[in-house]
Image (cartoon, rainbow, N blue to C red):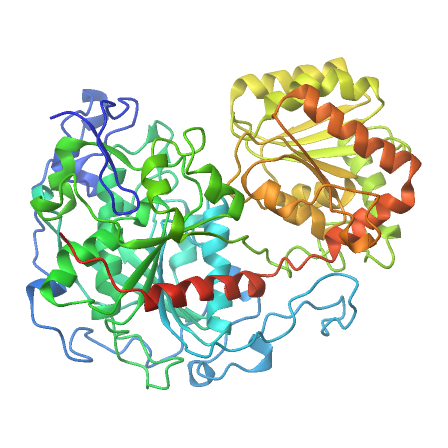
Length: 635
């Protein structure tokens, strides 16, 4: 039996491709199923002790195997009897409140954009979150499942989304839980983020089929109206990031995130943490009538488990699931022979029914992923579900990204007074060693130096940009070939090109604030955040017309009578140096010869509603539709 298994959208698809052999295999000593340790090289397995797949101590069995627990029967102590402090990173947001006031948050808990004196900003120069959002007419119990959640874990945009969207949903009156792994990698700066969590002392035994039974524990904190739940298991206690170490991706990632998906299904049934916004006293499980939002492939077995392991046993009859596709190119691919490791019934092999309504980054992406070019091998499956694919543009943190108050920039400004942006530009030029020339158009790029983000397009265009007197600053790291090419470009064009190899948050803020325009030649971009940051700061995006970039950037049209409708930037296609240079030329003419039109572009971008409150309302609508739809009966 050959093939590959996609742990995605609750669907198993087979093809002739095999799992890449380059992924690092896990060891039994770091919690892996022993099926994944056989391919270890001697140098890697030295000193590791093989152990049985099954747990050495039996914890509480998962719900379908037992009678439903009564409220309060699982936890050994009430974790909410005393107040938990927030982590240091959460404290800076000033969002923590006492548990006694969690049902009705005080004004201090609300996410206001403030001015430099700390008072709420009353101006309308820049689009802001309008205080407290409207409350949902029918509050729901929502469970987000994600492999990463900022500020605890973050490798990309998924972590940002999962750190912000649940808070926005809670602000609308929903009861919200987030389930994610508790990653301990031995790095004190990482591990201390989890130090203030409460150990719920709730051990549950999960059935992973051929990999036996595995005990998981849960940690918890309640902040910003959200129950943050962390799954504790040895597979999440390794050096590296959530997915890989210095040797490459962990070879048992499908197994690791099967544990996450099963544990997430158990959390609403077993954890006595409910009651914060439903009117109940703390100490009850969320229960069965919940809406799960599974994020990317790491959590996409959640809808399958609900249908195959729970609903057929009479549990979760009223639950629904939504799958959010943040990046379809990231897939959990495993050899088909390992289907038995997932803990799914055998009759689900090759025939997992679609149980989900799909969400993708934006409308444009929803169209792209149903095509051969953009579907990453799943286009037929996605096209068959096109009627329930919905696109939503994510929001950004308006407190962190605010040109009026940004602590990382040398000056502040508003759309009514843009003078501070000129100072930001001059200081940025000086910081990176470029000539301080206000008459030189300054372009920026922030992102990974890999094929998706298109740094090669910029590198190929650098001679043309330099010949036009344009300056370019690039911040990012990745493929060594691109890093080397950028260093060479600095040498070849010392007055025009600077690259900052690596990533630095303060520098990224200064690039967004100081540049005239931001380049985004991504070959595909599910949603994209940098163009949103840029518009927030009056920095005009110039981007490849793909996915979220096409949906969020309105190409400049000076002939539209209403200035507010004239656009926010430029898009181009295909993603190559010539088409990008043509778009830059159009932007440069406007920037150089039509400053009033350029300032209109800047102000249009700064006036966009980029808040999470806006996005949360759209998510809420999709969730309500999902709760109204009947579940697909398991075959």
